[in-house]
Length: 131
Image (cartoon, rainbow, N blue to C red; front, side, top):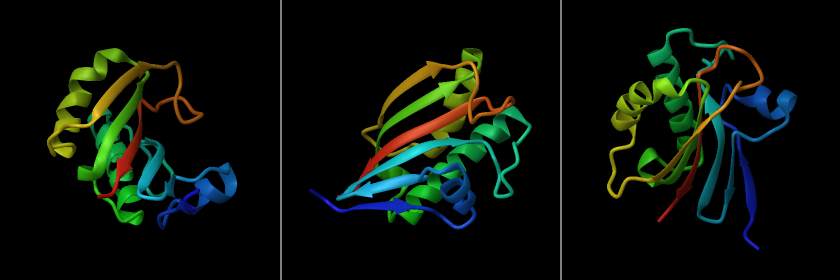
């Protein structure tokens, strides 16, 4: 069995200590990233819809970098959306971040509420594999 390690970037300690989950877990050469939402380093909701999607991707990027990976290592993405009409905007932002070919697998799911609070519009969960 491969060793498991919690990945907790600076600024996300409260998630691990108070909310009680790891932003990611690294097991062998695979990184399982918990759902990342559009909250800033002060744990505050980003209001603008596009900016919130960007922030979720920036949080994903931060967690991956802490694990020694990058967005180019992502092989699978699951996204949760409170309004599926935002998919077009989401895909525009996603295409700025996920550019490596082959592109990762992707599943988009509609959800009522994200991040335990109203106002969040997207949550991005990912799996990355280091070569």
